[in-house]
Length: 109
Length: 504
Image 1: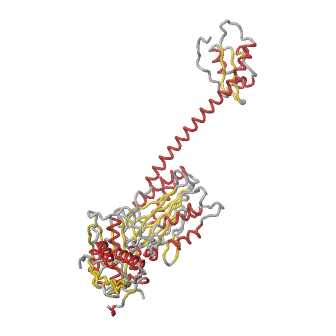
Image 2 (image 1 turned 180 degrees about the horizontal axis):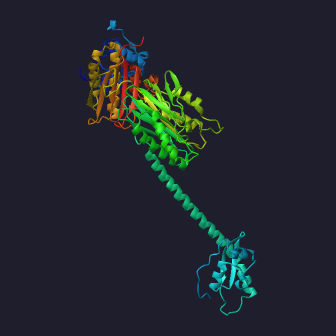
Image 3 (image 1 turned 135 degrees about the vertical axis):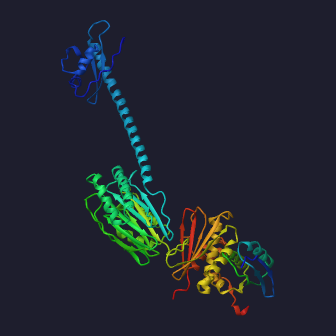
């Protein structure tokens, strides 16, 4: 395994703005994360963050998710995490992020 | 007019002339004095006719000596009145000048003694170990604070050729310079005894025989001598009347008991040797009585009970010495330190040796170094996971270990090595007794802030009241079974311990 560069795309529907993340979520993802949110900013629909194409999130990545969640909460937009592995579900539990966003069961994805 | 000076004549206190002048009410004509006095003879030889005693507060502080009048006439009554008046004015002024000169001399003497004590304190510092032994899997810390410029406490570490260490702590009766002199001599004798013996009882017995020849009769030395074998975790120790060491672990606080007569009191003493095993997670405290016998303003003693209680709660503190000293200083606040305080902590951090696989039961899985480039933490994680792949760790635990390794590596790269690529992060991986040990070492000079990690306040972060960052150390602590941090001369070491299987 090697480090994979972060990228994202937005696949929005009527109900949701879906941010699909690719690659490692670490300090190198910081500017991409902001740009991705900027693209969906201003809407009112729920925000779905799709993690199914990412297999590494570190503490800096957690901080990026916290920042995004803070902005979404200020805009009263619910946030849904999709495609999280069991390991990162556990990390979302440890950090209590799971108290502030909805984690989709794997079956729903 | 004064035509000539003669050398001042000294009148010693026991010269009868001194008493005569003190008793005289005013100027004295020497012609009329008949005493067996060296001073009187000297004055007459110098052709002194009239002596005016200068008396201040009942003390003869000097004399005004007059020779023959130019007119060859005797001194008149008016002359004498004038001289007596002059003497009464001059005497206190001379006394004052003498007092000032005496005080100056005393101050200079005090300064000289203070300077000598400073030098003595420096010399004594050189008698204490300049560095602490570095033993993989063990942490050793020591503290020394004399009550005065110099003290009678000491500690020492002497490495033996077979890898064992002699650990010594001692206390000479009294404090200050006398104790410091005996301390210096006792330390040298102990050092040379460790060259002849590696048995703690024999070291103390040999020292006792040598010390008893030189030590002043009213002085003695208490000393605890321990020989630590880091490979087998055994501690063999003997005690010459010193405070007992405490071994603290999750099982509680135990006194390691051994008794014996202090050094320098009686010849032909034998010292029993007691053996103890220092299990991983155990902190051993050796102390002098300056700690337990410290008083608070109410004159209560710090005592063994308080120390025991503190150890029960704080034995696992990374900086145990600081915890003890903080408690002591809080207790004895406002009270001048009465006795020297010396503390030595020997902590068994882990049964695994991070850099060597010679330790029984440890399988070395490998080691590597990487430059401190941001993003390398992912490389460290992947390589460690590869090395650990064959040891049979539960998959969820393996992933948790991976994330913790990445965080610890990122901490080493960013905080320890400040992202300087020329500084490397060293990683050692070993498996021992059903657990994987990953040691991550940086070259940082400031200690890694890895103690007492508080849970980050997510609500505050979401409200924008706190930085969204600050998860790394918290995650490490929550993801693995044990985190052990230590500092070496080279930098910080974080050791992550993860059992292969969850505890049932």
